[in-house]
Image (cartoon, rainbow, N blue to C red; front, top):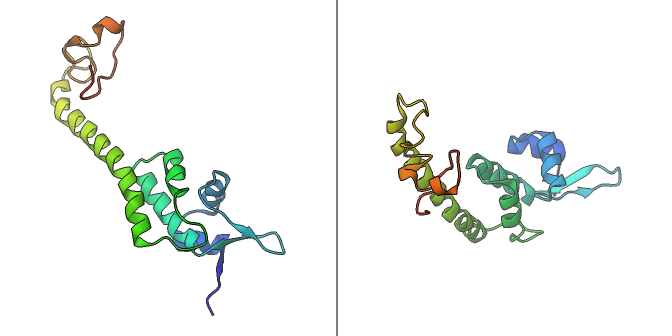
Length: 148
């Protein structure tokens, strides 16, 4: 007979996440547990899938606050469906696309940095492109694509 709930150790083993990480996720409201008569944590089986999504999202660089907000939209008490996950991933897609574009710009502009050693802030294509931010005061400022 399959147990309806997982112990913290079982959840850690199945998800590949440490027990301390699970406790941290719970303290941040990312996952929920129940307590048995001995006051030990027991996790509904649907929490396993949530933990995996948390780890994937973290690997993509999505902040825990964003992960938390997105997970709050999922239903409690049942394993999320494929449609739930499709909706969840769509919420992150725009942010990921924006970060990918920024990384591509950074990669493409790095060629001009070879040999510079950041001694040429006036001509730096990453920090002070065409000196667009010179009027905002001294020091290098990151110019984001599409903003001036």
